[in-house]
Image 1 (tube, rainbow, N blue to C red):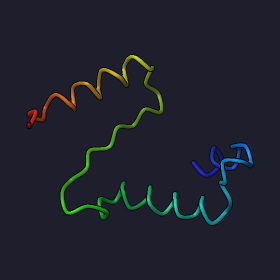
Image 2 (image 1 turned 30 degrees about the vertical axis):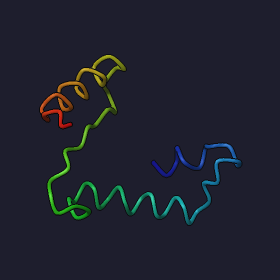
Image 3 (image 1 turned 180 degrees about the horizontal axis):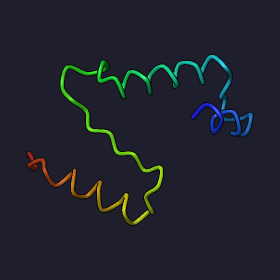
Image 4 (image 1 turned 135 degrees about the vertical axis):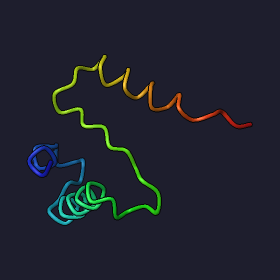
Length: 67
C-alpha cells in the first residue's frame, strides 16, 4: 500500500506522514482493533472487477433496509 500511495501524483498530498497513518490504520483493520464490532475485509488483490462487485453486492444484501 505504501508503494501505491508514494506513486500518486503530488497534488494528492500523500506525504510520508499520511502514508504512515494509512499504513497504521490498515494494520489496525487487519488486527480488528478499530471497531467494537467485527469488520469484514474484502481482499480484492487477485479479484476481477466483476468478482469484487458481486462480493460487495452479496455483503450489502445481508443487511435489511431501514426507513
